[in-house]
Length: 68
Image (cartoon, rainbow, N blue to C red; front, side):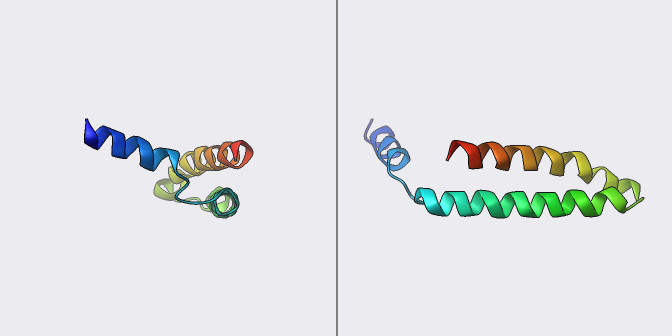
């Protein structure tokens, strides 16, 4: 039970403050949007498979930025 208490204490404390979380979310949004732009123009099948994943990443980072 002591290990569970330590996990709860760590999750309640802010390891990264809110301003840094917003900055990380913005950086993730910029990176994934840039990747979407590049993969939209490349005709290689293997690179095009990355395009939807980058779209989901952009959506996730946008939600994270909105929540923070």
